Amino acid sequence: MRLHTAFAALALAGLTACGQPSTSPQADKSETNSPEISQADREAETARLNEWFEVKFNEAVARSPMTATFLGSREGYDKWDDVSMEAQDREMDIQRLNVAEMRQEFDPAKLTDQGALSFRLAEYNLEQAERANKWRSHNYTFNQMFGVQSRIPSFLVAQHKVISKDDAEAYIARLVGIEAYLGQHLTNTRAAAGNGIRPPLFVYDYVLSDARNVLSGEPFSAERIDSPLLADFKGKIDALLISETITEEEHDDLLARAITALNDHVGPAYDGLIAYMEADRESATTDDGAWKLPNGDNYYADRLAQMTTTDMSADEIHDLGLAEVARIHGEMEAIMVEVGFEGTLQDFFEFTRTDEQFFYPNTPEGKERYLNEATDMINIMEEALPAYFKTFPQASLEVKAVEPFREKSAGKAFYQRPAPDGSRPGVYYANLYRMQDMPIYQMEALAYHEGIPGHHMQLAISQELQGLPKFRKFGGVTAYTEGWGLYSEFLPKEMGFYTDPMSDYGRLAMELWRAARLVVDTGLHDKQWTREEAIQYLLDNTPNPEGDCIKAIERYIVMPGQATAYKIGMNKIIELREEAKAELGEAFDIRDFHEIVLKDGPVPLAILEENVKAWTASIKAG
Image (cartoon, rainbow, N blue to C red; front, side):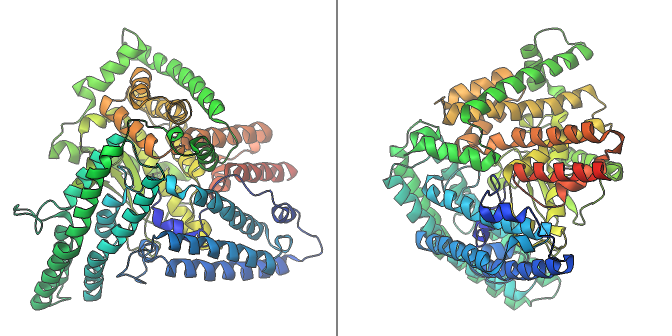
């Protein structure tokens, strides 16, 4: 699951908390509340701080039309973000000024615990933003995972709602604006390439395929199907016509102008991208890891620190991965014996990745069955939640297939959070492009991870929390969020799910997958493994199909360090839970533990540990 990069605009302006907590004097001071300050005064001062955060958040949203759209606002609905280097420099200056102002205006020692935590996270956001800004050119703008070439159409299709004529006008304006928006990204990409920063060779074909898909169909070619954006716009204004929101004349005028915008602006923009990628492809190499980039070792070390929110080195993470792979192999061998399979674990892997009984047909009916059964699993899980949780998401959840225009290059599964105003549900996207990459035995664990009690539950609850500033509700900490997602695969085993041994095998297979990530991510980016070596490691040590392994390694290559956060985050949550159980004995309540983990929104793992230990101490103290 990946939070859309438009939210990067919100880092106070950059309001995404991640990494280790600040150890600045202000943070330390916030941990000891002065006894002479009354609780009422603390609450009043915290309310004032939250009002200040609200102002800064709204100012940041006003500078990011795409973020406003994600949040359900119509502000700047006809515009794209300014992604020029100059705009990025301005955002950093604003973040620095905001934190300086916060430190001048507020004393964390006079705040409530939640207020002090908000202060602390805001400070750390700046530290993380400074770190990310240092490496901003090291990110591959055009890639198969979250590249701008596919993010543009997916944004318009999934985020730009059309319920009025003005909304349709704004859509057309955004079609026109694609040329300038894509142009800024190309300018940044050319500058990075001039400094020796370009993606590996394999990425180019994915980007070119995505870009050509956008231009596939009317009005760009004489095919009898509409291009993705024309089809989307037509569907949205057809609905306006049916509801009598617009007249037939207005409908036809909007459609004609959209076609003009597609021909005059979208087509040339994507033609320019295609021409650049075809030419630059000649300079690409098959060196895959971050080590190849300028100062790549330090870049990767920073990525690991940011993603895991720990100070673990690449070697430590690699060794942890090897140990976890060996442990999980042992548990899988026990299941292999239980189901009566004779042979080695690798033989069992080959059996489960190739035997037809483990896959639905690669047909519309097979894909529909997968979506329906995944939905049923989530609905059944919902009924069991009250015994393990106290707070539940208000937003609804839908299970959908990844759209055809991006399914070939998109990841296996991901989650899109709901709109805060309830206008858009949370969505678990399953990539059903190739059904042999989506084994039935992994369906249950995948549904829990992306849906309930995983990402939908955690992220929807996070943005529905009361009394927290918005930057905390909508922030993201990969180790926390993905650690919770992986913990949410593990927890249902204790709740009585995975009754079929093969479903439990699927759960272990997915945990094994995350453990293997620790090995291959550090292998690729620190130990200079090739793409082929990393793919072979996954084939040798996991049951995942070859296509799955290839897609995964290609993902890890363009997102250094991100894949390490899952297992490290899960391990920390389980470690904290077991420590609390041991200390509290019969006083331990799993519902209260989950409440403590979820109540603050995404936080770095060190802060999560502080919270759990403080809760444990308070229970012991009575």
